[in-house]
Each structure stands twice: as structure tokens, then as C-alpha cells.
Image (cartoon, rainbow, N blue to C red; front, top):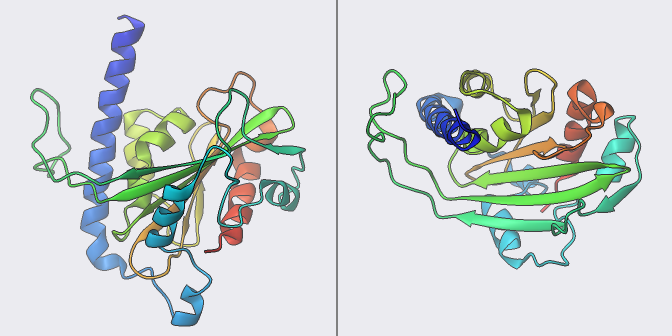
Length: 242
């Protein structure tokens, strides 16, 4: 099998896994309750609208928003490094992507579908904000995923998590079933090359934070993976401010 066909097959598997994750999330939402809190607590939390409005305003010279301070998080986790904005390769330090979402649709012809899932679930509007840094010699990427729908931010990020964590489709589905709850952080299986935290939001919606060394790492820093990466991600999650 050629490299192109292998990559295409992997992408299809990720689409199926992501859709299955959305379905699992949808079935769980009715029992999960709201992620909102009191008015006082909400004042210290990001909202989907705030993430989206900020993403629209990011430029090539914008700094990573929402109070995220990678150097402080690394120090708090005992993995202090010299941090500079933007990884090598010319990527901007911060960029935003807005997705209007998609309605539910039929499964692609000839593609297997998860048991009990009649169609590819609808994808709600969502926003990604991605910040890139260099920590000494290692790239570090922070992906913030926000949506106005409850309980689905991690599932929206599953294809990205799969790429960053080098996960197969079965591992992606397993991760989606054991995704972090609000205030929790999970590390991807295997080398632990990505960590995912869910963060309480102001009002309706859901927010996930994904931290990794990116998907194209020539030489990974082993100290920025596994349990250490989990601690770094937890520290970053506590920094988030409107």
C-alpha cells in the first residue's frame, strides 16, 4: 500500500472515530448537566463567545491570549525551559479558526459505521485557538477548543488529538469514552505525547485544552510528555482568563 493510500485510510478512520465520539457525547449530554456555575465564578471563566471574538481578532503578531503563560506552567511542573513564542517554521504565535459546523449527514457509501449510530452526527459551531512556542529546543503547541454545545469539545478535537498522540481509530474511540470531565486532565495512551484538559466555561458550552509537542516533531523532549505534560497542562488550565 502506498504512503498516500495509507494516509487516506488513516484519515477516514479518524473521521469515523470522531463521528463516533460525537455520538457518544450526544448521548451523554442529557445526563451530564450544565458546565456553567454561579455568576461570580463565571466572571473568571472563558465563554464560547469570548473565545470566538478573540480568535477573529488574532493577527500574525498577536501573543497567545487568555493569560496563557507557558514558561510559568513549565516552571510549576518542574520542567523549566527557555520559552520563546512561535515554533520554528514561521508559524504565528497564535492563530484562530472558526468552524460554522455541519448538519447530520448519511454515512459515506461503503464506509463502516459504529453500532447504533444511524448517521454522521451534526457538528456544532466551534472555534480553535492554537498557540505555538519553542521551549528550549522543543516545539510546544497549545490548542484551545471551544463550542457553544455542552460536553463535546474533546470530541471535536479528536482528529487533532489522534494526530498529536499518534493514536489509531480504536484508541481514539477508547479515549473519547474516557475523556476528561470538567476540571480533569487525561494523557493520551502510549508515549503520552498529548494531554487534554476540560475547563469550566461561563454560560453554555464546552472548552478543552490540548497540549503537545505538535504533530511533526523531529526530536521530542521526553520531559514534555506523560505525567510531566499532564502537570504542565493542568497549570495552563488554571491560568485561563477572559
